[in-house]
Every structure is written in C-alpha cells, then in structure tokens.
Image (cartoon, rainbow, N blue to C red):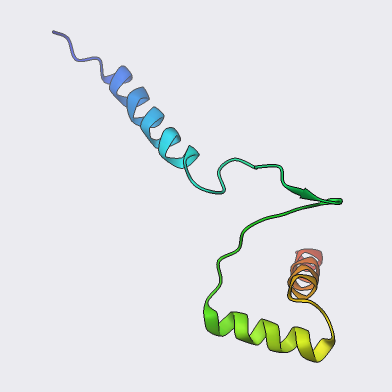
Length: 77
C-alpha cells in the first residue's frame, strides 16, 4: 500500500475545517433585528458590571453603550 502524503494533508485540512465549522460563530445564523444582526458576546462578570454601571450613568441601555464603544473604536482604525 502506498502512502499518499497529499491525501493525508488534505484529510488533515478537512478535519480542521470541519472543527472550525462547528464553532458557534462559524456560520452566521442570520438573526436580524431591524437593520442590525444579533450576535452573542461572552464577557467577564466584573467588566459587565462596569458596562452596566456606565450605561446607567449615561442613561443608555447596555446594548447601546456596547454599540457606541465598538463604533467609536472602529472609526479610529
């Protein structure tokens, strides 16, 4: 039996692609809210408490504050 190294490399890549494809954010699920796409964000509890505190002081929702922060950062880049 001949070992086909190219096939083994392709098989490895297929395994990697399949693994990555199973990640929760690998495929957009297309959940739209108006003109915005809903995402899932994991954040440390202490940072979330700070975000909530800031949002409350600014009279904004958590989502509005996070959107604004991301927008402002994206504008700088």
